[in-house]
Amino acid sequence: MEDSRIALPIGTTLDRYIKKKQDEFQYATGELSQLLRDIALAGKVVNREINKAGLINIGGAIGTQNVQGEEQQKLDVLANIRFIRALTKGGEACAIISEEDEHFTDLKNDGKYVIAIDPLDGSSNIDVNVSIGTIFSVYRRVSPLGKPIEKEDIMQSGIEQVAAGYLLYGSSTMLVYTTGHGVNGFTYEPSLGEYFLSHPDMMIPEDGSIYSVNEGMYNSFPEPVKKYITHCHDQQYSARYIGSLVADFHRNLLKGGIYMYPPTEKNPDGKLRLMYECNALSFIVEQAGGMASTGTGRILEVAPQSLHQRVPLFIGSKRMVEKAVSFF
Ligand SMILES: O=P(O)(O)OC[C@H]1O[C@](O)(COP(=O)(O)O)[C@@H](O)[C@@H]1O
Ligand SMILES: [Mg+2]
Ligand SMILES: [Mg+2]
Image (cartoon, rainbow, N blue to C red; front, side, top):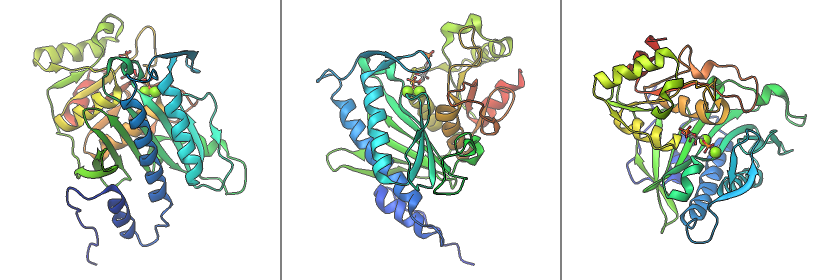
């Protein structure tokens, strides 16, 4: 049978791209497409708020902490509200797991999808005008519609994701996502209010020469990580660390490299959260030909035990991640 999949040209709008991709699947109902549009729309709203952060006093701490004891920024809370509102109104999601909420939110509708989201990633960088992002994972609801949400709907491994993506609010704003058929990147044109396909079929270089880790914590890293960092020094790799996971990941996706957040004394399981940081980026990196590991196993196969669970993360170019985990 003839392959109906066609490569769409650079400059295709996100809406048209989503529609064309949906048409390639005979039994697609359009619900996932609508969900992606809802997320993209909320991303535009959050992008607008972020751009004004220095002007109208919406940067800065709010004086509260999230469930993990981290200081919440005004934009963390605002972005959370914007995404939850867009997903509630959109009607395709039945539940949302968010970094900013202790428990999942049951939207009490017949939506077929469960979303895990870090509404604003790298929020300590807001006040210094450095790139930040949003990270999301999409899962299919598994329990029957019309009944209460079950644990099995919420506590799914990354391998079950049907889509994942991120928004990067950087020198340009971008939406990068996968539905399990490769990774595509769209750049937002604010005066037109449209995302355009700018990075079709993204593939991460198999090898690279950038390593990204908070090296200030070197003394508390496990021995295998110290050894790998020595290897990076020996190879004279470039050290690049923004401190916004999305931005660090995006750079390495384009240029080749490895991002690491190992266990430390302060965070013995690493700092990053499995369900709304690591899983989405791991799905994307694997779709782009890269690799993501805890150091001892594939991130996507970790069975979640709690909503805000942390895991060590080694992610990026396949050869570099393989090398890093070979020290464990
Ligand atoms: O300052 P550290 O310990 O290097 O941590 C940086 C990491 O923490 C995070 O900021 C955590 O994300 P949030 O801002 O969503 O809490 C990552 O984006 C980033 O890579
Ligand atoms: Mg984050
Ligand atoms: Mg966050």
